[in-house]
Length: 366
Length: 185
Image (cartoon, rainbow over all chains, first blue to last red; front, side, top):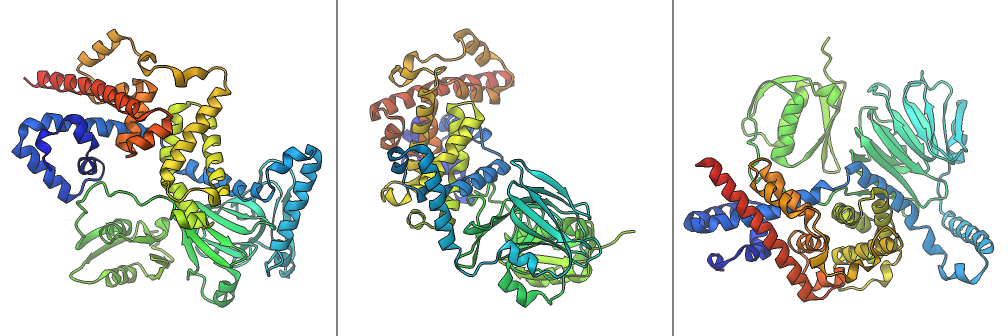
């Protein structure tokens, strides 16, 4: 390829040139550096084309919606996308509108009835299985309703939704609530008393965070989406095996901000969905692995591990983030390193769903 | 991915969504400033995509399909809106007004400050269709044939629009380079 005869427009059209601007890697960086060194007279043209591409990119990315908006839009889309196709559109034009509306309700009702015959667990099943007396809050209005739980966690209860929780919620070892419908939770942090949301067949365990659970009785799917912090979600089937295990152990699918899971009630399957399309690594130069720490915070060390290994580590920043460590690594592998760190901060780790999850009481600096 | 999506794979749908929502939203915002309208259109777009998945052609790239559908929807919604010019499509791009007067351009180009921002200002003030073509070709990597279909104009017009846009931007970048050289010596 003879780039020497290229004009600005040719550069703009050239995939390899664009790759260098939009997705630089060590190979294309060195190619274009060499090219400019060899033909300095082309450097102005290249700068020109590059600045056009970069301004264009900036201008487009400037209008990108926030992550929150992306999730909200998806939420609405998921909500509506499976409803209408059940009724052929043409119907509306053939019959009187009021009649069709009534029919539509019947059709939807029937379809749901059919889908629902599989062994699913309803809210009624859940609360009738609880022996302790429960308090129930229901939202029959058309707006969201704020419910404050005894531990001052808040629940934004959506229309046509209800939650129940034990009367002795505040004294129980576990904080447990039962939900039907949709609600946004903001849970106060308390590592000694984990927070559980039971909704249809799903159990959501919380590490102190805010998140959304959507589990309407008649929906085919149950959804949990996280806004801040981390939650782990498992199905009731999983839970029966886990229920006796210690509280600090996490199980099921872990979701972090901008991630969500969809649980298909028919297939009894949890699907974790990707939030973002895989992102371009802006720089090919990764930070060097840290080998010696002197009074480094655990969050610094973890961040370095995440970057150098390209993994995700899940831990409670408030509990562990400020722990200080002095250590040095030689040629340990990742797990050995994490194990060393965990010993230092009296924590345990396990690998769940390609992430390293750290759990424990944290360091108390009083 | 497209095949999985067409067979009703929810996961594939979510991946498609996340892959394209940002660029589509951004494109929508360029065409209509009204944020709520963009949100509505984008949502409907994905809902329709899901509902009509079995009828979609195999050959089309999802990205192309989405961009074309988005632009058609926006123009449909604009043509229902009286504040916008319904004959916009028929206007020659050359007489589509540039927002800034000539004098302002010259002053802007000559000023030493905000050099980096200037290209952006220019970009923002390119005639809408020049901007669209520039963005679709150089940022989104669509072929000329695809762009011509997205914008419902012929391929030669696409090339012309692109040429004019680049020419304008080049003049600007050159003058920017000169002013910066001038500053140094």
